[in-house]
Structure formats: C-alpha cells, structure tokens
Image (cartoon, rainbow, N blue to C red):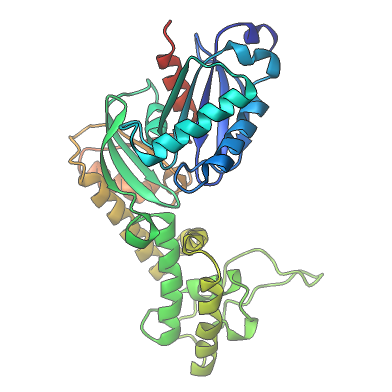
Length: 352
C-alpha cells in the first residue's frame, strides 16, 4: 500500500442488514487499497449507538491510523436510508452515526455522503450510471427508479408482513406453506415437506417417507437434501401428518418471521430436481418481480441494475426473470453489492 496512502483517499461503505462492508480507495482513479467488514448497518433497525460502533469497527480496520488524515470523502449506502431527503429518519440516523464514527477515529473527511444501499448498488454498475431502474431481490425485494442518482419512485420493499413479493422471504414462506398443505391434504406432494422438516430438526418418525436422510459409515447424516419424491405419500399416515404439523408450527414460530428466508435455497434445490411445487413457487416469484419492475413503467432498453442473491450468476430467479423481461425489451445488469458504487459516489463528491 505504501506510497498509495500519501495521496487523497476515499471510503465507500455498504451497510446492510447483516454486515457493513468498507472499501478504501484512491480518490484520483478509484484503485482499491483495502476492504473490511463490521456489524449490521441497517439505519432503521440498528440503534444509533450500535450503528456507530459497527461503522467505526469497519472504518478502523480498513483505514490505517497514519492515513486517516488523507481521507477526503466518505459515502455510505445504508439499508433503511435514502439520498432523496435529509429529513428521512433512516438518513438522519445514518448520517449521525457515520459522522460520530469518523470523529471517533480522527478521519476529517470533508465530504460525507449518505444514500440508500440500493442507490449505491445502482451506482456500482459499469459507468456509474445516474439514471435507470434498480432491482433488489434477496431476503427482501424492492425496485426503484433512479433519477440523478437519487431514488424517486419505489415499488414494494414493504417488508415481510406487507410485501417483498418474490423475495427470499416470500419463497421460504411458500416452502413452509407447501409443507403444511401437503400434510393437511390441501396441497400436492412435494419433497419440500420433508426437507423443511429436516431443516427444522423435526423427529424423523414424523417426516414423510422418502425424506429420511442417508448416513455415512460413522453414523453421521449426509448433507444432501435429496430424497424420493413422495408421490401419493405412501406410509405417511394421518396420525404422522398431524404430528408433523404439531412439531413444525412451534419450530417455525420460535424464530423471527424473516428467518423463513432460509428455506429459499431448499426451493431452488427442489426445483432443480423437477419438483413441481418448487418449480411453481419460483415461477410465481419471477412473476412477482416482473410485476414490480413493470410498475415503474420502464422504457424498452432502459437499464435495470440488479443485486441480491436471487438474481446473481447462480441465482434461481436469474433465468426466469431475464426471460420475462426480454419479452418487454429489458435486460438485467447484475452487481454484487454497493461498495464500488459508494466508492464512485465518494469520488464524485470530492472536487478534483
């Protein structure tokens, strides 16, 4: 790093619900000099004192003490914030925490910017675009129209109780609903019933036949989630199905609702094995995301920058959503996260 630290520096932050990432880069050409992580950074759900600590943690790890005076601009993309209004509660909380964290570390950045993590992700696309659409499909789901690098219109992102349709939470909840409906006789047979039950640690004797795990020679359960498709559910008596429901419901209710998102990978795996119920869930999720994007009234060929695990290179919704968008003259431009965008915005804020 050496001589690189003797020039003007910028920091970009991507503060999400599970962690905060920080990137140190040169102000002139954006060369990355270091990366670090800290605790959760959602500006609406993390109390300001803890948010300050998490930001200070990430900043202290990425900016060497001897180089802190060289930092000229810092931009943070925060879940729960927006660049559109300083009066936004999340924005004011994020700015207060970031300002305090910088002061604590003696980083005298002349330019401190706060935006949403989605605005930062949009800016992470090649060319640092200023206009277009942003789509996030991970644990939650939201789409935004970006104008002059600010979000001007939002569709969904309404949380697990009211929205986030097509998200990881929505998919995971659908998996558990499918398991319950198979057990009570309202739904089609699906491997998801057994897989969800095993993931929750339900007793083996209440699971549908064909979902019992295989074991190695040492008696350890193998990690594979595969099993015979329980067509007709042979051997799954009404009494066992009732026991399945009796065990499953309290196991689910013991966790925060958002934890249902952890079942989304099961749906992707089941769909890969041609489970009809899982395939239907993913089709409906892609339909929901298409509806979310269309509500922004995109123009043919308009840029859509996407992020989130459901839409990445291995994302289970990447292909089905891309196919749906293609019929409307649209395509996705995927980015891994908002750190490069936050760095780009910090560089733009620093006068050359």
